[in-house]
Every structure is written in structure tokens, then in C-alpha cells.
Length: 241
Image 1 (cartoon, rainbow, N blue to C red):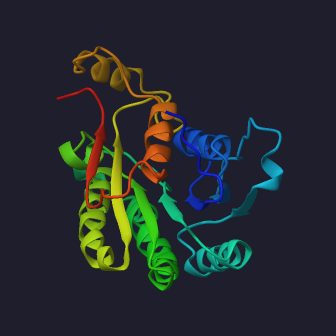
Image 2: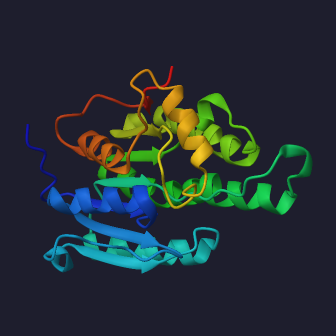
């Protein structure tokens, strides 16, 4: 089965980092035209022909005006928006009794509030079109909780509930909304936590951890024409029970 997104315009919020960069490269590989945002980490593209189908903007999703400006530029450039992937996310880990409120607020501002603002802006375009797909990149931590990550787990749990709720609101307009929950994988956010990697492998029924390419492939599959009657679903891409 060959997946092609040729002719489709996709907005990817959070295209840098391990998962974001993998999704971006997979989108380009399948022929999608992409409007991508990044913040601190540079975007790396493996396909040399990407310049014809990619525009990028440096955006801090906590700055609503900056986010709105970038999205409006994408809308003007592409005319029609077929899909949105919200992948922006940060961690500010600490045990809850000593967690600072600024770290709590910062994580929710990026992981959850950013999704609210981006989806609200772009869903209006999709409503006008009566068509569109939205995917949020949540986390298995939003389903199970996580030691020392009350803010991160809360933001991802919120993203899951948010995705299921707006799937109900937007379905009448032909817009699907689904959440993808990666399991543990080695990313720029946790590269120094060897203990977490070992624990994830030990608790996996397959004895392995997730990888960004797996998430990218599954996400792009959801955007393809092979999937048209799926919405309000939470996909846990993991082998831990």
C-alpha cells in the first residue's frame, strides 16, 4: 500500500524535534505541501526537492499574535487547508510538591493552550470548506500519568479530552479530529534519562520502545484517503499494557 498526499496542504505546528521532524519528512516524502512552524530547534529535511512544497515560520505558540500571523500566512499561501497536525510540546519536570507554578503554566501554555488557539483559527477555514482533518500529538502519559510530570501528563490528558470533544463539535462540518499518543521514545526532551528508557523496555510486551518514524508513518496514514470515517479516536502507539 503506497500512501500519497499529493495535492494536499498540511499545516504542522511543531516541526522540529524528533517527532516533528520525522512527521515533516514523511509528509514531504508522500508529496504533501506543508506549512511548518518551529521554535528553538532547526528543521532538518532529507529530501532535496522540499523547497518547492515547504514554507516554514519560526513561531512561539505562546505568543498568540505570532501564531495567528503565521497561520494566516499559510492560509493565504495555500488557499485550502486539508489537514492540521498539532505537535508542539515541552517538558518542565519535577516532583509535584516542589513544582513551580511557572513550570506548570509554561507546559500547559505550549502543550494545550497552543492547540486551542491553532485549531480554533484553522478549524474556521475547514468549516468554510466543509472538509478537513486534525491530528493532535498527545502522549501515553496523558492516559497513565507519569512520575515527576504532573504538568506534562495533565497537558496531554487535556489534549486527549479536548480532541474527543471537538471531534463532536466539528464532525457536522466534515472535519475529523483524532489524537495520536506516542509511547516512550528517545527524543531531545529525554535523551539523558536512560533509566526511563530501560523501564519502558522492561514494561513493554515486545521488549522495545517507540520511535519517531513509527509515529510519523501512522500520522501520515491517518491523513491519507485510506482513512475517511475515523474521528474522536485516541491511538495509543505503544506496546506497554
